[in-house]
Image (cartoon, rainbow, N blue to C red; front, top):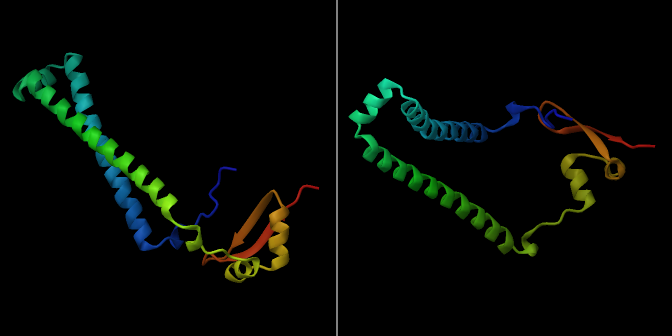
Length: 148
């Protein structure tokens, strides 16, 4: 099953759409920032005369070594930020007390999703469930697929 579970992007909030667009742009800018110098270096090493002149113009090997140091520091900072984020999320997950988590009973679950208690019990027994939604993202019908 390769399809989306919920294929309704119009239900996303404006903040989620803007956030996704921002992350998309930042990732592409980072890829371009890291790949353009590698293409230039590859062309230079393969003997492209324009690139050789450009490398001489910008300082030759010394400039290349300085750029490589900048790239290395940039990659270290990005890796450190990524590792810090992972450690922060792991620490935060462990520090949330279990008493802060709200437990929901079946009646509350059925009331929130507007599902009947009998349907909920049938769906719990089923290995696969098809959920039908209306145009506003609310559950309309549950179809449990029970192997008999």
